[in-house]
Image (cartoon, rainbow, N blue to C red):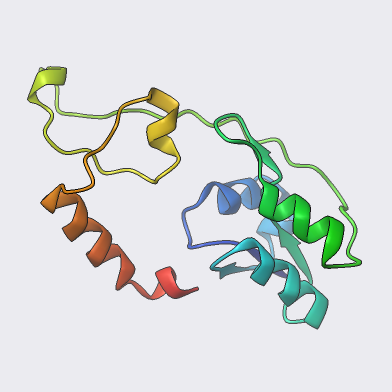
Length: 139
């Protein structure tokens, strides 16, 4: 069975992109905590292939991926996977924007809708702390 390294944890857009490829989806998906770890795992033979982001419509080029591929490895890009992504601000029916006091999101998603999230939000800090304790967060 093919082992496929990807930028984890499970549930990321990288894993979603992996799952759109039948040959990769049939393998074992192995999450890693960052792009250099995915690439190093391929080099060391810990996984057979790796799937990493090169660009996205919010942040543009993913410099850590481009720099690692250009300067730190002899690996070559084998294919491109285009994954259309839509981000949504979700709330219960009838909620007005003024009613929203806390937003839970991944860091880059806030740039998609240009809505600052206060760093001192107690609920947000509790959520990050809880997520950081999951086993997949250390992948």
